[in-house]
Length: 245
Image 1 (cartoon, rainbow, N blue to C red):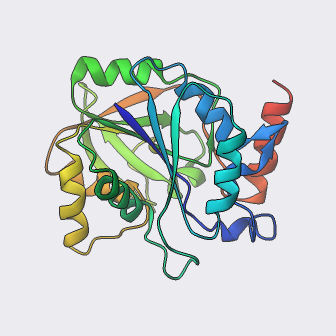
Image 2 (image 1 turned 90 degrees about the vertical axis):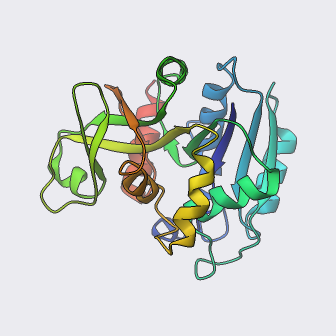
Image 3 (image 1 turned 180 degrees about the horizontal axis):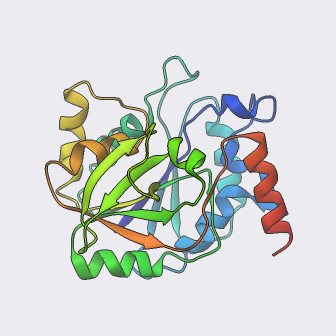
């Protein structure tokens, strides 16, 4: 298994903080956001190689970060060649970029590089290994307004994803899919097909929405909180939660 951290966004909602600095490198309680993710990945025995996909604008800050990082993982920073939000590839486009560049033929763990959580990923990976099927991280969300801004999913009794809706006006459940996935290596070939059909290349959940109608995807339900740092409000929340821990 290999891992891909998505970090090629331009984070305009966090301006001026991210106007010239990448969101995953913002400081939270004394260290960059991405360091928390690396610490989780270091606990996975199955994982040795990690790719961080970014853009030309933020490539050098990530390179500096990598050169100063002490880790047992082999981490490579990849530049997707874009330099502004108007020519960005989008998250799904970036995944395909890395698949092509590195000629990936492995199961792939994918994480958004702007998420924070306190739990480890071992149970999630073990679930994938046991079921041997594509899997997405799912959490229960009580706030209906937040569900309306997220990827709402419905699972059957066997945890198979049977419905997916991006930013629903009337949510069908209290479950939301987060940007933590493991795709089997044969599934990676379908990302190119998805893009060839001119589907939305940006939000990674759009691929799940397309994929579940073609092959079985399971939802791993976590009772833990995941903070998606997308606004100044969620950034402050993350600082409070991780400073107090």
